[in-house]
Image 1: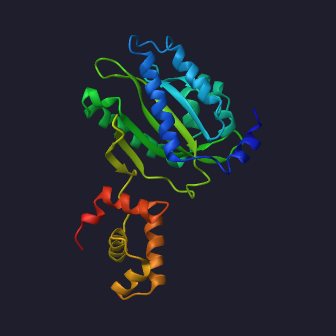
Image 2 (image 1 turned 180 degrees about the vertical axis):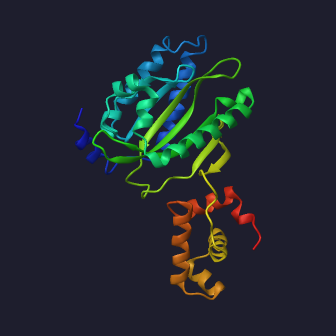
Length: 278
């Protein structure tokens, strides 16, 4: 295996897409169900472990994954690629447990992560038994690598094993280094159902804390952008300069924490901004 520095350099131009991560998640969940239909024993799932080992050999994504035993609140499996993403040895997490992870999370993100995960647990409990297995939580936070630097991780978690009463036994999580593409900003979190037919049903999208305060004029600009109008068109409609419109666009992205206008429009729709009256 290449050293961590070379590995991170190789990931400057990763073959990364959100779809590839979703596909990995779907593959592992399906593989696990194939080998766990007659047993709830994680240790008995040798085929699944082999699938994890095979997946660990793929070096095209800045990704590592883990399996968390919920009743015991300990890691059952840590992908060795965490060495090349964050510099940590899997044994650090196996032996140190969740306290090790929490101790290396950015202090400004701790309350956010706790709130998001608590909301996801509440939604999980409210779901009918047949839908619980399809729940997915997608959020981002900063974590300290072994060299002391902080990196942005996108974590996508989903139930892996549930008992007959709906109690969560194992969760599976993919962690992707998005430092190079997130612009130093937190992604809006998403709690959704990824259904077998390929459709997604969003249950909640947003971020912890009060909704961003978007001014009246910024709201006007955002609504016009949602209709497909250009900055020039909006400037003419509102009788302001194109530079002013562009400044409003920058403020919208800054306040919502979104990477682009398309993402800001989606966020505004889920938060109910676009339905509000002036």
